[in-house]
Length: 70
Image 1 (cartoon, rainbow, N blue to C red):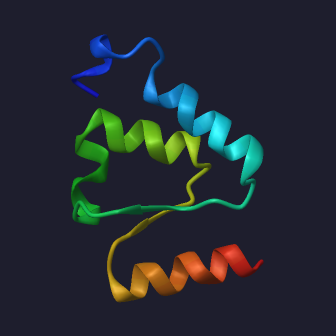
Image 2 (cartoon, one colour):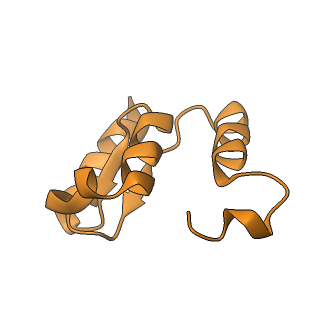
């Protein structure tokens, strides 16, 4: 995001490391789903997570759990 210049490594690097350990991880996004395509960070996270990003709602959590159980 906007503070990446403070970090030696981008957040993308850390997300990719996390996925090497937790291959079935999902991302719960608190931003309303209709805005996901409007923000570069949400688009990037969705790309990194392989479209395993879900809204932080009851239905989104249910869908994320279903994904994790596959």
